[in-house]
Length: 206
Image (cartoon, rainbow, N blue to C red; front, side, top):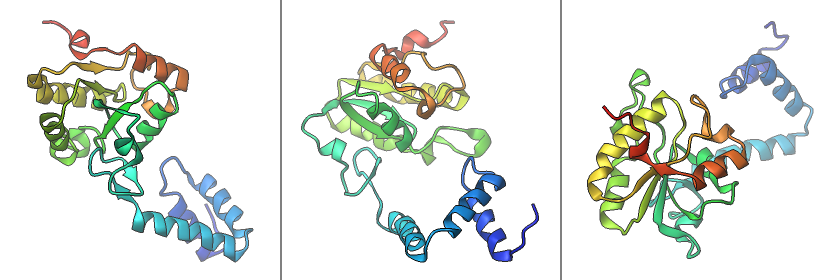
């Protein structure tokens, strides 16, 4: 792509680093911002800087939060003895939008992916084990994406948690293999949570 301005090219290159944003989309976004007044662009840039500087991660579940403990973990209306384990904050938002789940969460911060150099120690797995060991828990729901990395992480978590003798369930496969939770429609995702099954039932018996 040929640019008439070095400044324009630099701005487009920065936007195109965002996931799912190619150079054409980046150019459209940059030109859109360029047509805004300086005060509006300043608010946009300021919001990003403030987000990066002030955002916190819940000390209990590791979800993104404004405070040390997120609003879900502090809510007396939630079932804190049920923990739904998810990959990241996007999955928490997707499940919350279903209005079908009223327990707590545990955000891993990713999935085990040896090809990408992501191992169990890079995720919030030990904090989950400690949480289960030190607090009353009646069910652990493993709500991870239906792909190879998700299945690898499911199997590892089951091995780490099975000795606690707590029911470990997984969301029903209403989501096709290779699908990610954040892209599932609310009805399908909600039904998958309601009709969750024991994780051991999904294993191939040898």
